[in-house]
Image (tube, rainbow, N blue to C red; front, side):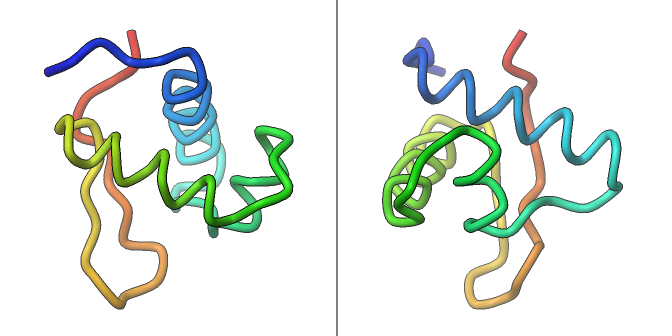
Length: 73
């Protein structure tokens, strides 16, 4: 697995905290707001990189199926 960029690490850590608190993953819009980004397409790109590197996974076309496979720490 590749080393995470600062922004990727921030997104992954935010996901971990959100899931720990709510027991389900945030939507793209919720995640965008949590990390201070205006664009959900930026979140999409960051999540795709995390997926490529084996940190997260999800079922295509199904909402809130994101799973964390490897922690940011």
